[in-house]
Length: 141
Length: 480
Image 1 (cartoon, rainbow over the protein chains, first blue to last red):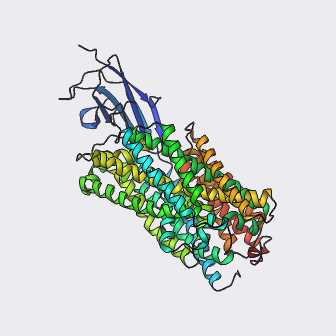
Image 2: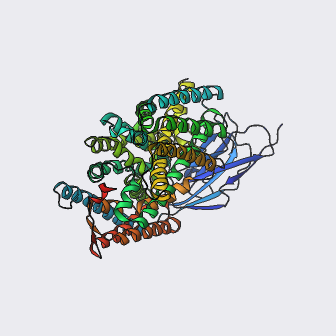
Image 3: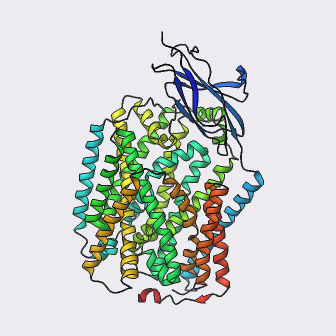
């Protein structure tokens, strides 16, 4: 009987990964077993992964997954191998990885957005005014 | 990271497609190239391009592999705002329409954007402008080349070096033989293929998904993708828009098309191209939003588009057909941009570099100019191939060029529309805008760099309108 694989995350490198964009690329490897494995990746808002707060993020043969659309907060992930049929666990769970999503402060965002809007309308105005003045020969050329 | 997906095409099919399309494009290049009787014909397609070809070339050139590959990545990372952020790049084409009219009026016999900048603002500004333009153009070209090699491998298993070399050889060959005639002609065909392909892929995705189910899945599993307040995504809307403005307003890829089109055609062509381009990234990006609801696992964010498209289209047993469609669409989106960059960059090198800088503005024999043009196409293509070989993550260089090109937006507007402006302020605007944008890139994030750059550049350019402004003689543009 083949040995049950030991699982660990290879990406991200740190146990606590920080991002402002709500996306993380998870990768894992199974050691101790040369046969292809079936993996289950779980996500939870609680590091103890209680039933009501945990969801299955992925189940399949891939050894990685890009997880996007994460809201602000800390998201915990763990992975193990399972039986392909009934999903019964085969290996122990990997050491979990925590992904902390922190958005830019709101005042800063609003200031940058206001600046962007100002530049957009100023650019539009410069083009429209320039175009009509040019049409009327007011700037020459 | 082990992947479960096989390539959607086998190497043999991939090679057949490469050879067939390559041979066809080169043959078209030779055939169209006969129309170029002199260097002006070679560089500017006889200055007689009509509306259909003009619109198609503007649209096809702007649909790069970034559009078909990065739009899905934007959607995957930034959701609905990401789709809109990418689409704002079409505003650059829309706003360039009236500028095209002005360019034709001011400098009807112009050759390059560098010509205009040199005559309008002098040598210092011209030098900075050329440096920014060359860096951006080469970064764009090399990222296209790398994308070509990686896509050919991802789709068919053909090794990176072979795919990269094949795509670059084909594009250099037909651009060399046919000049802008070949570039515009193939753009027309490519734009039709791309539009059909995007419609086929997009509509196939729509048949597999229900929008309400997609929305509820995203709300439960990927809530940030449909969130109204997602800072990076919101800021990316403006950042991408200004990056697009800077790219279109300054680059010789677009100015050469203005000079190539008939005067009455240029504004309409750019406007139509902008309208037609707007939904393309939305359609391409939409398929990335369908990945989660359809249970498609993404392993590599950069391959989101081709992966989801091939999975969905291949689900009904049409795997090879799906692979061929995706391969052809991506080949066309790559080739339509690579050829334009080769042609426009070689024009800048020939006209601005060789004729104006090295030969100090001497009137050179047409045969010499044509030879210089051809050698520069080969040189630019070879340089891009060499830089693409190590597969450096040059998309970062392309993103870094965002604040550089954004710093040129207001100098170009001032140059075209203001008779009075201080040229020294234009120089400072470009330098300070670039510096501020680069600072923002490394300290805040990529999604603010172009925005900060254009903001700083705008303030300095506006100051130059009122402080030490000198009157420019527009007629001097046509005396050169």
